[in-house]
Image (cartoon, rainbow, N blue to C red; front, side, top):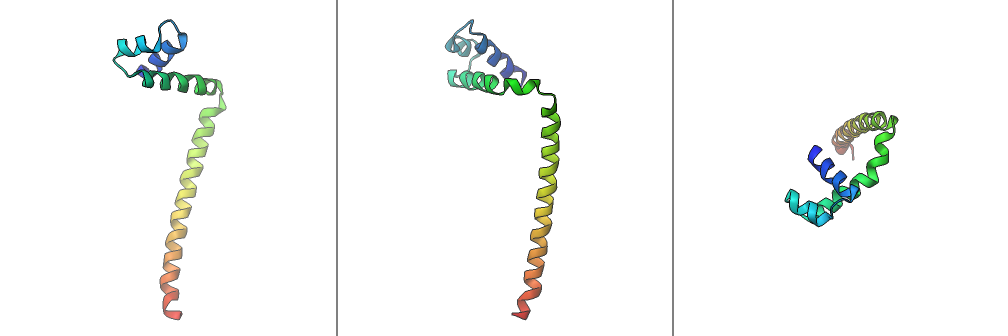
Length: 87
């Protein structure tokens, strides 16, 4: 993770071309370009204080919803088995 950040930051600075950075770091130029683009697109999110908390809350909510979906699927299958003899 630290390596990717350093390469992306170096590319964003523009002191060397992407090809020079890729050659120096033994990477493909497309990889360096991708990391640079990701840094520039996601960079502003680093300075939002609530971003980390929001992601954690969203992950917790997703886990809870997936758990609820699982329970509902199990209940549905159980009901289907119980209702099958009645039809």
